[in-house]
Image 1: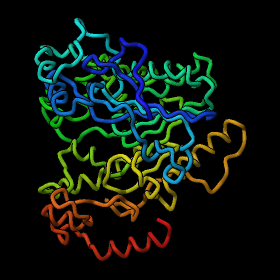
Image 2 (image 1 turned 180 degrees about the vertical axis):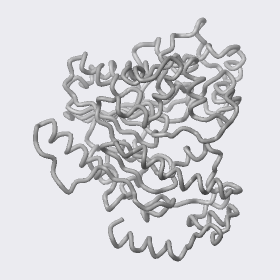
Image 3 (image 1 turned 60 degrees about the vertical axis):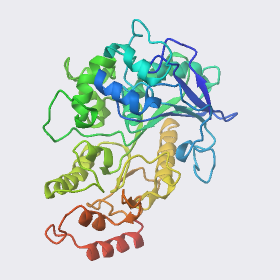
Image 4 (image 1 turned 45 degrees about the vertical axis):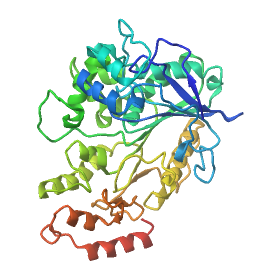
Length: 424
C-alpha cells in the first residue's frame, strides 16, 4: 500500500501535519475495504503532551513510511486472506487521538510543522493547540477515493480495531450517508474488531490525571469537549446533553445503527482488563480480580446477544483481523474469515431477495466459560521470558491458589480434548 496525503490540507493530524491514507488498488474490483487504525486516545493537555512525547506517530504524520504491507484481512495474498485479497484496500493511520470522533476546527494559530518534539511541546501552551479531526479525516478520505472509483463500488466495508473499531461504530452510518449523497449504490457495512467495550466497574478519580488511570467513560466524557466529538444522530436522540459519551459503547449504540455490522470480540479482552488494572502475566492477581475476569465473559455475552453477526472466542487477547494467523481462530468449528464470508453471502442473498444458504453460520459465541478454554486461542506468553504458558501456569505465577479457587488443570485438559474432537 502506498501513502497519499489528503487533498484538503485543512484536515490534519493532532500536530497540524497532513493526514492521509495508504491505498492498494485492485483494478476492476468493486469491493472496498477501508481500515481505521487503533491506539486509544488522549483527553487533556497533559495526556496529549505525554502521548506526543511517547508515541508521536499517533499524533503526527511526520514519520510515516511511504509504503505499508497489509497483513490478515489487509493482505493481498489469497492464502492469508481468502475472501478480501482482491478488494481495493485503504488503511487510514490514526493520528487524531479522538477515537475517530473529532470534528474540531483548526486551532488558532495553527501549529507550525514539527521541528523536533521538544520545540513543538514547548509551543503547546494549551490543549487547543492540538487539532482533533478523526471524523473529518474519514470524510476526506472518502472524497479523495472518488477519482479512484469508490462511487462504482458494490460493497464498502468500514473496518477497524480497538479504538478504530469504536470509530467504525461512530462513523459507519455517516459514511453510508456520504456515499449515498455522492450517488453511489454501494452497500456499506461495518467490521468492529476489539472495539466493543463495557463501562468500567472501578470507582476512581473523575479528573483522570493520566490516561492509564482513567476509565473509558471518564476519558470520553472529558475528551468529547476537547475533541468537539460527534456521535451518530440516532444515538444522540436517546441521550440528553452531557450523556453523549454513552454512544461510544457498542451495546448502547448498536440498536440505533442502520448499516449492517459484524462484531469480532475476544470474551476476555486484554484492554478491557487493563482499564480495571488487571494485567495478565503481571506480578499478582487477587481472587476478586479473578472473579471479575470470570464475570466479564458473561457480561460481554449478554451485551452481544442482540448482535446479528458476531465472532466471540473465549480467549485472553486483543485485536484479530490484521494478525497473519487470523484464519486459525475458530468458534464452534468455524474460522473468522469463514464467518465473515457467510455474513457476506447472507447480506447479498437478502439484497437480492434470495434465501440465505444454511450451514454457513455467522453468529458464533463460545459456550465455554473460562479464559483460553477454546483450543484455538492465541498462546499466552510470559512477559519476562517470552515463553508460552498455559492459563494455569500463568495464574500460579501470579500467586493464585488453584485448588482454593476450585480449578482443575487436568479436568480442563480433558474438556479441551473433548472440544477439539467435537470441532470446538
